[in-house]
Length: 154
Image 1: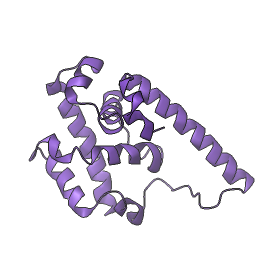
Image 2: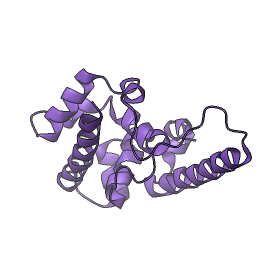
Image 3: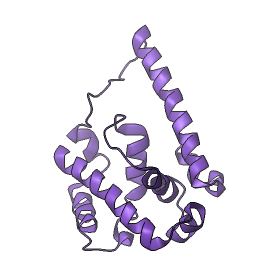
Image 4: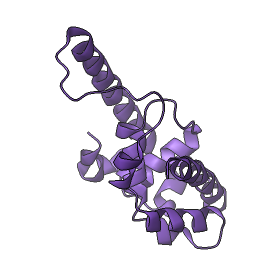
């Protein structure tokens, strides 16, 4: 489902897309839990709240982390990290254990819109009825949360 949001589902309002992702996650979590309870799970393991360094290195390199840190400190523009936003969104929705990072509704909407649906800030302004000067600080705060988590793993 996450991969399809960048194609025809891109036209959906980001709030609706988030609801679809949430339902998909709940279905996956239920089937994973049932597989573990029945003993059918091969490589599925529940992390106790953190992602391993090896797993994270497959998604975010040390150089990527430096770029995220620079953005979270307002040293560079958000365009410098836009290539990482889809990776962060997929990490948030499919890899990170639930509850690892707490995001506000607007932060999640930005993550879905920018990271999974590949929408611009201008498009999200209309959907969320907020100005870019309101959205970008909220986005920066979300990136700071991810940067803090990634730094604690590295």
